Image (tube, rainbow, N blue to C red; front, top):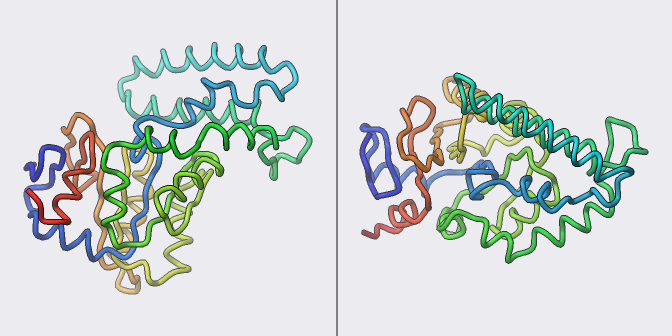
Length: 263
């Protein structure tokens, strides 16, 4: 590992000039939202603000029950041997439970349950431009402004939230409520052969299967994919680089400086 900037660490084989060239020549950037571009997760604020509770029958009782089981599961995950994976699994499962319990229209069939209209209104009020700007890691907006590639969100988060961030940051597209990211990526690659030089922005183990899919396509002679660069958010800056090429610390200004050739 070597440091190119105080918040940019790379594999020993990657130079600053090569990194700059890869970033500026990328065709597409596929980004995670929670804990990658956002310092935290908007989903946490959805629960903290009790969005959907007032429009749910026995909503406050359901919230208390949800909070109890959430605390219990996080306590168990924290003591797990593979803490990162366990915590990520619990986060996904408990927000999914909150989503099902208070955010969705209970009258619609399971396969097409939409967010309640009241919930959509509450989300629009929560995720305004001021909220988005304050929630982003520093330098994220500047990074996307300098990066020429088409930008796509692949996120498990709620559609109104992901689309609000995508609009604020000038993204080309936003795929939300994605349960299987590797399958979503494969559909994109098969339908759009212009996706040749790919950048992925991730934060943890949840994206490993998607990254493996991208690398599989990179190895195939019939595939249009020519290059894959993995940028991983890690506030500790201590990744082992088995799952990424570049580690980003607490801000994106180092990457911006590299693209602009600033010291």
